[in-house]
Length: 489
Ligand code: BG6
Image 1 (cartoon, helix red, strand yellow):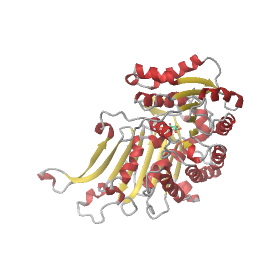
Image 2 (spheres, rainbow, N blue to C red):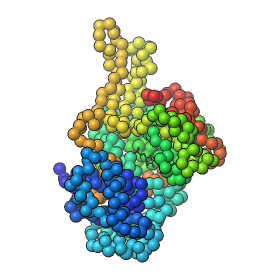
Image 3 (spheres, protein in one colour):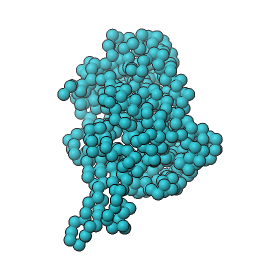
């Protein structure tokens, strides 16, 4: 087994006092350190625009760590080791002069990782200023989403970055690709011949991908209202999941082999016709309702909201892939805020057996389903038909699970957060779990037609009560095809 410990590097985190850094990135770096996966010489530079006392800013980061890492995992020795790696540097992202102090801190470190946890609008300026102080040649650039808000703006950002960083040193984050079960999709599909032989329109009737969140906007109204659920979730996370389910087997596990196959899927996504836009796509916005038995406000009543907004907080749609493997197999995608539970799951519905010999009244439940649960309770379950036990049961069928629950099966192991995996991969220089420029652009091309269609129609999103599974029309979307959302619920 090769060592998993990353090589030594200097990790420069732009936007170090922001929500993402405090909530996810520092805790992930800490967990890597605690697991002894950081090189002893690795240093972490927290970069932010806030001037002032270093000790104060480091205190904010430490407080974040203590808040977002569970007590059981805050081991005093590991915390001390981690804090000793940290220093704070004040950098005004747009002011080249302030990068001089950064360059001094980096010194002659051989490997710099520049993580951009800032709005994408400043990525170009950060790259240019890093270049001015001689910090681009030995650097990997990590870009957070969202990269742009449509194809044109994402090209602008990517082109600005490309002036200073070749594609093989650019790591675009989609944190869903770092989730353990998402990576398991590759193992499931390509390490088991059992599934791959069935993985096409001859055996699969349709696929569902649901990414539901219980939370609302969580103080992020300003950002979210500019984006909406299509840009925030479908353009990246759900389309990446769709690609991993739909892609052809790659020739090997190299980043480009996998990305080439994903791009083929994105290119094959059918555009929406004018009818398709009204029949196959549902936009929703939550109104006041209940979450965990407590009343919660609607989207337009959230803190700092603009009461006129027609931004969607829910999208359900039917996507079709125009190729031999998937012709006639709809992919139903659904994602929303303020749903009854946090649930990310993919359900592969297999077709009925071609010749049915059991009691007619049981026919409806006969198809096999492969349920891939990303969160919570990560695991994979295959629903198969068996016979009920007992002399009195005749040939009565029952549908039961063949189950692989990751947390039970690997009981001793903590399931790492997606960012831990992704940060480790960047440090090791592996691009497999990052998104290539053309993937982003094909995904935008497909989403842009929806955005344009919505703009043209001027229709407001359909209301749904907080704590429900979305507007009624999202149920009609799938029942129209003679199906229902799995387990709804
Ligand atoms: C982010 C979105 O990319 O993913 C958020 O910007 C969303 O709006 C989050 O809440 C969901 O991630 P997870 O890992 O909690 O499913």
